[in-house]
Structures are given as structure tokens and as C-alpha cells.
Length: 267
Image (tube, rainbow, N blue to C red):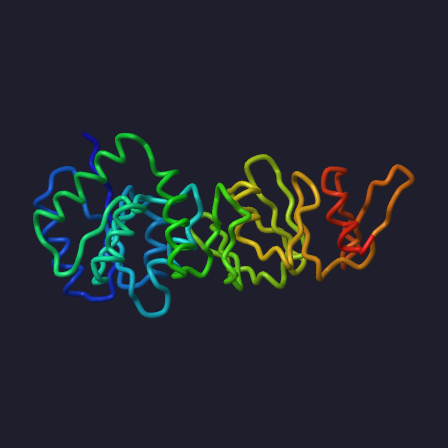
């Protein structure tokens, strides 16, 4: 059986060390890093590419929920929550996450959670883990970004102020207000902001689900524009629209999305 590379994320040093010592006794679990906060964890995940993360929820600065939202789909490990939440919240985590471990940690419960992760890894179900975690965060209102990956119409009223883009081992933070438009290039999204183009690996559907629909408008199968940067709209003889953005970028509106521009123009 494959050994799971594991990272522990908890702001309490003794909690990290205690969990690491307990995990030493569990076969096929290898702790490769311990992180005291979410920012360190994001860098560690980018550097090591772990299979599994034991993640505390309540941490200063960035919560465990918010950290999950900062991860890109291609770097999303399996998550086991480590939480002091009451039993009702814990049951919710049990349904949507790989598993949970309630503080103070019980050895039998820890072994059970690790076993679930090993089974999940064998089924290569990490993609579904990302989706269900996002659904959990949307339902509990605990995330900065709560995008329904498969149901983008069920959006949270709380939208992120920045987009986190992984660039190798580094993370770039792009203010949402600075994004002028986004277009697709195969499996990559080109985010145009403040005169620069940032490349991120995700799908248009996932990215659209994380954007405030009152600000960002899908105008093409492969294009999203920031309404605040539209300076003009032209319509051709055949009824097709073309948008001009600040900086003179020209964005074509496909016929299937033309009704959105008509509505915007009050036509």
C-alpha cells in the first residue's frame, strides 16, 4: 500500500507534536511537515505536494476553511479536520470531509480517520473531496470563497477580495478589483489584471463560480469580463456584440451569451 505524505497544520505547537507522535504509530502515514499557520501550510503544500493534511479549523489570520479556498484544484490534498467543534458541526464534517478528529484526540478515532484516508486515496477521490469541502463551507458560511463547483448558481453572498494564483512554488495574490478580463487557453486561465497576465490551472466553470456575478460577466465560452472596465459596446449587422475595455482590449461576445449584454444595456 502507498504511504501517504502528510502535513499537520495547527497553530498550537504541542498539538502538532502530539499528533505527529501518534501518527508515527500508524502504518503508511508519513509526516513530512508541520505548519503553525495557513500561509505556511500553503507554501508547504506547494513545495511537497502532500497526499493528506490534518487541518485545524480555528487558527489566527486565515482559518482552515479559508486555506482550503486558496488551494488550486491540482494541488488539493485530502483533508482530515482536527476540530474542537461540538458534535453537531463534527457530524457535518464527517459527511463532507474525508474525516474528522475531535480534540482531545482519541487514538482509536485517529486510526479510523487515517484508515478512511488510505481507502480514499486508493479510490483516487481527491477531486470529489475538493467539491464536497467547498459545498460544506458554503453551507456553514465559514469560507471566504464558497463556490459550488458543480452548481455555480448557488453562490454565497460573500465574495473574495483577491484571487490566489500558484506560480511554481510561489503564490501571487491578485485583487479582484484589478482583474479586467479572463480568457481560457486550454486547461489554463489567463487572468488579465493591472497590465499583467497571470496563468492559473483551473476550469472556467470553477473560476466563474468563485467570482461575484454582479461584477464579472461570462460573455463567451472562454471569456469573462469585469463590468467596471467596459467602456463601449458595439453591435454588428448580424447582431453580434464586441466589448471595448479600458486599455482598448477587444472582447467578442458569442451569440449564446448576447442576451446578457442586451440585459446590461437595457435593451
